[in-house]
Image (cartoon, rainbow, N blue to C red; front, top):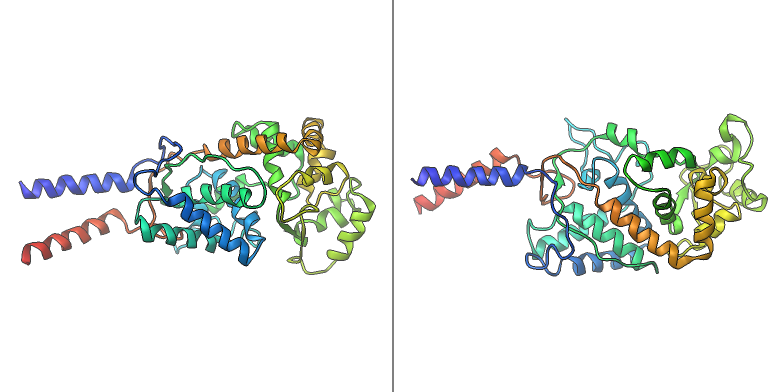
Length: 342
């Protein structure tokens, strides 16, 4: 009988560790198991913004780059292993995404209070919301209850994530694949209301748009001169420039800049200059900040609803998966042996 109970417990443990991640997401998911989870994450985000204001934009973008690749499962946070190339070094992420250590800090804060309860995937969702709200943007109630993936795929990220060179038409098609509308696309692109971009991502527009050897004609001449000085030919591609005129404040200035042909990235400016479907939404958000905020919240909620159907767990460390199930069973056997011998 004791052996049966141990086997039953082991099977439950194995099932819990590898259960599918398709959870029923809901607000207040941790209200009983870890009621301070959201406030603990918010405190970490606030501290990180005091240390480095740019971290707000970096943290916010983690949700987009995680959720579009096999759902919101924190696969983005996994470090490479000898047997797995993760997503951090994917083409759209390498030398671009930052502030992984902020998520680490939030996870550590939550683990001290509620060990092995709150997923890294949910922390990314909470952190993105807090980064927006603490930058002057809207706040919203996040749905929680995700599991963390057991693997990551650099190949999948390369196939899905758009390039800074992308045009509006290709972005519309990409978002349509995830049941996200044109309004969702434009609103979520408004995440570039805060933060910076690298010269590496803009020299294409400045000196060789569409392989013409000429700059993008959809660029204000004075703004082009400013970018020429910031990002000269042969210059340091890691130098950064502001994505809009108010890079530390989440507002609708980004859309005003696009209307005035002062978008930093091709993927930004193309929303106004490249497709009539997105142009009208950009124009609307440029004068209706409340409308932008409302649409952005709706888009972030939809993005957060993208779930993985792969096995999941609650990682103890966001950068690595937990021990395999057989390792956990071995640990429990050792515990039982020690109990029996005591």
